[in-house]
Image 1 (cartoon, rainbow, N blue to C red):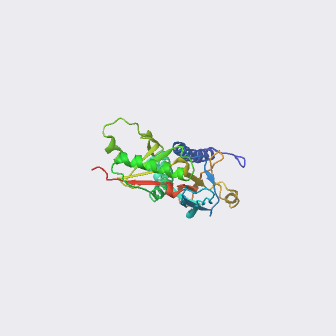
Image 2: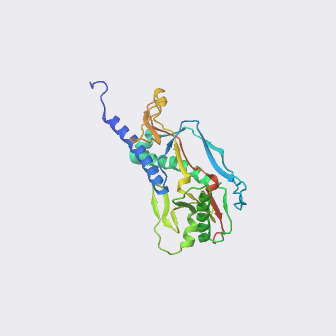
Image 3: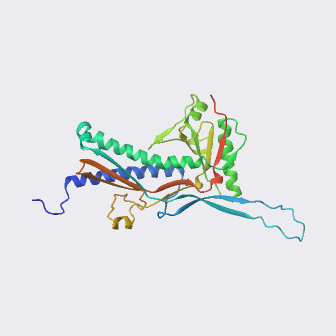
Length: 297
């Protein structure tokens, strides 16, 4: 008889699966942060309010007669609640029949891959929706090229008025607009971890190529890299563990997702559970430039 608490082959395989899932998920986000230029994610507790900001104020006239009081220019930064940090819970299950009929790799591993992709897309889709609500309107953009130029200029100008430096600008465009503009031009489009983008394109650090469901054709969105932030809830929080909910997380300082797998003998299915709390958004909503133009036919 095997001794108690013996680590068995099945335990190692399950742990390896959990670590692989978590590692791949966090590697994707590390890559996205790298190409966006975002600094380290900021940890928040569940229930914390995330607030988008916008600046208001008017510069007073600088022509002041000798000896007269110089009027103050009043600038204020206002906030409005954008979202609240929450823990999101997801689960999937694969039946023993599916494993028998299709094999482990197809039934379990491929569904793990799709599970990971959908979790990632859930976060980015909300980010793209938020970008489309940007309030820095751009006028006079009649072509794709002009829209890119004016959107970038508007972002840089906005940051200057806030006395902040925009070290780089990222753009978000519809993939069809890019290819209509490029035609047969030879441009390197990078496609990694589900993100399509072009580096150093028309003065932008990075331009992301999105689908019709993420940005309409005939629209360019731009903002400064300093404006994009990522908040997360740590799934390894000790209170979760005390409640008996132990998830495998990454081995670094930043835990973006928790993942756990188990076999349910009552139903003969392989279950997988994921928890995460990630919000990616732009801090200043009035520093998100939205330039609409007439899309080419």
